Each structure stands twice: as C-alpha cells, then as structure tokens.
Length: 93
Image (cartoon, helix red, strand yellow):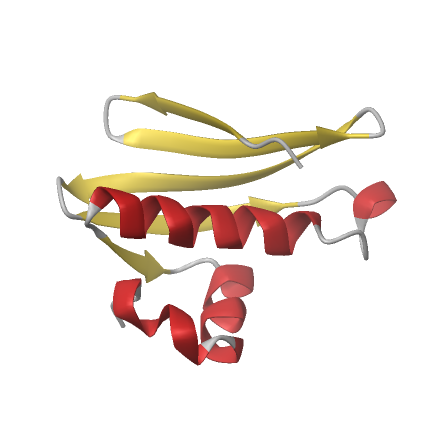
C-alpha cells in the first residue's frame, strides 16, 4: 500500500487510495521531535482491508526514522498503540 506524506507548516497528513477511496491520518507537529496524531478516517468501503493499520504503522515508521515521538490523541491511533507494545519506543503518553 503506497502512503503519501504531506506536510504544510505544522500540519501533516498521511494518505492512501485504495479502490478509488482515500484513507487518511492527520497530525500536528508540536515541536521538531513531537507530533500529535489527531484524526484517522477510513471510508466504510475500505473497512477491514488494513488501511487504518497501514497508516498507523507508517506513522510509527516515520517517527522512528525521523527520531520523534507521537502523542496518539486520535482514538484509533491510541487503540493501536495499546495493541502494539513494540511501538512504545515512539509513543508518548
């Protein structure tokens, strides 16, 4: 699944299109070493296809590669962080 990164100022978005529908995860950069994931949206047509999970994993990989932490305000991202203890190195509660 190809995931695009867009960042304008302190706001960013990860998105992917599958079968003509787009899922997204948005975030705000509160400092060079900290982002706040605030929203995840996956259209009903893509539910159960791993789109949300792929976006969450992409955010984790980006944080590891960039050397920053994630505050998971989004309920979906928070739930994923709790399910994946191996992500705790980049999660800030």
